[in-house]
Amino acid sequence: MRKLKLLLDADWYTRRLLVESYLHLAWARYLKSVPFSTVAPSLGVNMSETTFERPSLGDQKVLAAVSQAVHIMSKYTFWESQCLVKAMAAMKMLEKRNIESTLYLGTAKDENGKLIAHAWLRSGPFYITGAEVMNQFTVVGKFAKTLGGERQSENNGSGFSESSS
Image (cartoon, rainbow, N blue to C red; front, top):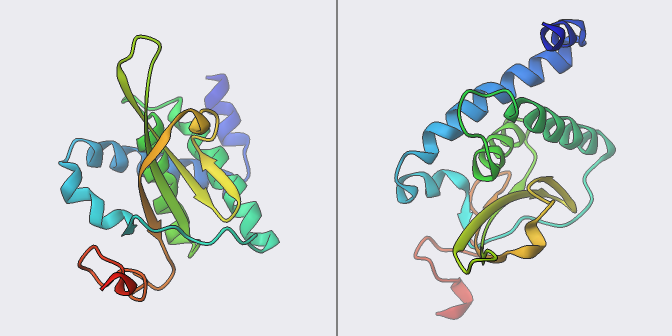
């Protein structure tokens, strides 16, 4: 009840953002159950990154708010909302606000030698989700969600850079 009271006491913008993040976390969790090859095209340009340039002050505030909302609501879902789910939810929320982002997929071995995976999201120089342990992982995939769709000059759709022809 205390947490519900906190939600109801929050300003309208925060309440809306928390509800939106909950819905995107649910959708992202569903997408995690779908074959990755089906989901991957919706994540952006494969093996590409967005710029590391610092966004406007307004966008920086949006990045912080989205990050906070996703982290808070992921604790209250009835389903697993770990790194990939949080990264995909935050990416969708940023896309809705016309803010570019890059989703990273990484692998590493745990203390028992078992292969483990992690996902994190970056926008400009800021890490929105998953930054806590990202340095322990080797990047094996990345997807750039750019503002105008795919960057045709970097990827002609065949999986090869135009300059490599």
